[in-house]
Image (cartoon, one colour):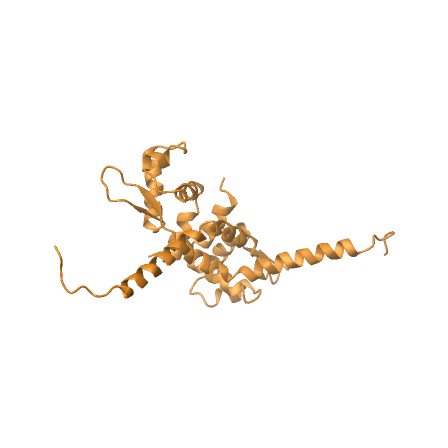
Length: 115
Length: 115
């Protein structure tokens, strides 16, 4: 059994699925309209939608004729909360890089090599 | 070829690999010490480390005897930046839930059913 966070991350680990979420961020839409910008068959798009639906990242309408998809962002909050624990690490790295660059700029050029 | 963000997300989509990152957040350590808390063989842990290394999430020392692993958080920043675009969606949902709960509390209880 896969834990929920792993299921979410695996669902997001595909550029087409992230593009689908980006489209749904603009508003709910039909599977047909979702498929249009992708050079993919409807079954291929449906497969991606199933992965997203299983991860709880999208919800689908109940209307049999027009089952609009819409974004469901709650699992994304869990990813954001998890990743927040690591923020200080990348901020530290950026700080270190910045002070290194300042140091480089501040240093006068060496006249020659010392041995 | 897989894009970088997909590679990072796929590497994170495993609870053991996330536990390894959590351990490395405490400081660099050897593969042996990393493996200790997990009920896993060294080769199994090494396989996870390779996935993390390929995704640029860890770096390994060059010392042949003791190749310490350390966390490399830059790819996590990319995930955080990507997910930030969706923050308003989960915040909206929480706001809606909150106002719905306020509404429920404010409403006087109905005396009976109307048809």
